Every structure is written in structure tokens, then in C-alpha cells.
Length: 192
Image 1 (cartoon, rainbow, N blue to C red):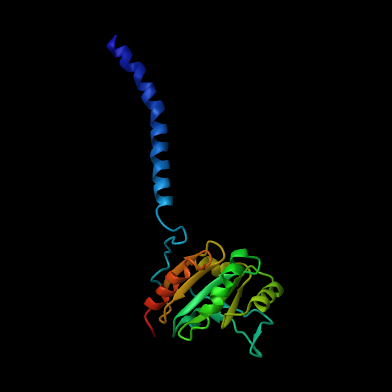
Image 2: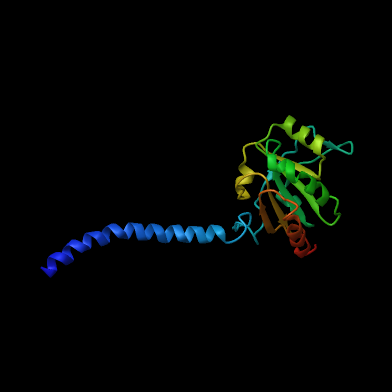
């Protein structure tokens, strides 16, 4: 009789096992999601050279009477560079733009932009209306360069050291709340 009772209780334990596994996984996900800033997703590229790329300029973009050039990975060497991936159709890009304009005023850094999957006329209009903080703008019409950079979506901003190594990745827009920490990261980047 005891054996029959034990045999009947085993199937109930098997039904509980998936529920227990689900509860454990849900708890783990909640702890991981709730612990920290979602914009600080680790990047496999931190501490590694920027990916090799060459981007054509945004045709027709002019600053100071001269065409704004495109750029390549080789152009990232020599001084600290902020690389911003943006698009005119991106609402958060519009919100962060004044902070990029302000960053570009610092003569110790260079700010460049990768215009991703955008219409050239819209991109030029965007920069014409909001100001152009970029010393170079490369176009990435199919998003291939952005994939090489490990971009999840626009905007994303990288700090590249004078040696061409990626030092920091900001996922999402620069905001008044996070610009201080971003500037601190810039200060921590070793000079050329």
C-alpha cells in the first residue's frame, strides 16, 4: 500500500518540475533586468580596434564652404573621436543632437557621424536645421557598417581612443542625465 501511494505522488512531482524551472528562470531574468542601466549593455568591441570600414561622404553636405568628407577606420586614429550613429528619421537622435553640438565645441575631441539607412536629402535637412556637429559624415545606406560596430539601433555613440581602440559604447541617446558620465569617459581616454 505504501508503494502505491509513493507511485501516485511521483507524477505530481514531474508536473511541478517545469513550474519550478520557469519560476527560477523568471527570477533570474528579473534580477538581471533590474540590475543596472539598460544603456550599458556590454559590448564585445570594448578594448578592441574599431572595425575596418570606409564610408562615402553625405553627398552635398557642406560646412564652411567646403564639402564634409566621409571617413574610414584609419581616420579614427591620432586623437580621441566620438562616433555617433544617427538618422534623420530617429526621434531620439533629434533629442540628443544639441548635446553632440556641444561636445563638438571641445577642441580636444573630434565628433564624426555615421548616417545609417537614411535618405540623403532628409539627412542634409536634419543637419541644416539642427546644426552639424560632425567633422566627417559617412553614409551607411544598408546598415552594414553599423552591424560591424555591433549597433542595436540608432542612436548609439562610441568613444574611440587615439590608437583606434573602442573605449566606450553608449546605447541610446545622450541625455542631460547621462552626458556627465559620458564626458567623464572622454576625460579618462588616454590622449594621443
